Image 1: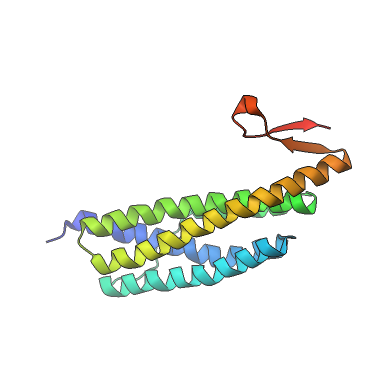
Image 2: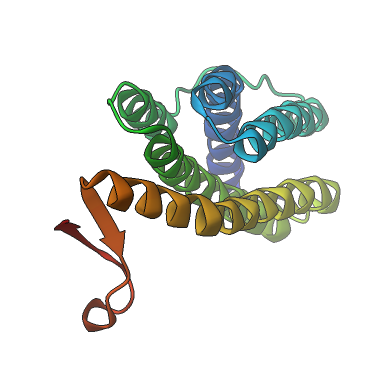
Length: 187
């Protein structure tokens, strides 16, 4: 017999993720539209399709649990989405905006990776093997999206640094003294 308190925690965590994913379904088209890089825009459009699948998987789990997916607001995702919207209102040069959007998107991905890792562990503890399979599938897709964003960032960030350096504004350059994290300096 499952611990009722653990089951409730599991359901609450799933509801939190469900709300987070539904918030993303609304935010991803805005991120795609704000992206000037075609590959980045296409990545957001693809992730929107995946996110819809993530919502469907969560709905499957709720159906198996005989529970409703609604009833919890994900304040963490709400904050991340607001930060991303704020970023998109900034007056950055196009490639710099893409860099900023990637940063916002990766914060979202890391939040989701943590959430799915947590619910997968809870599902394993509770012996919910079917749930574990569905959750692992989504977790893997979130990790792949994060990796794609990192790959895109490598070229987009370099382009943004070059463009801004050419314009005589601000240049972002790697610095050995700070672990290669980059430093901002006036050109």
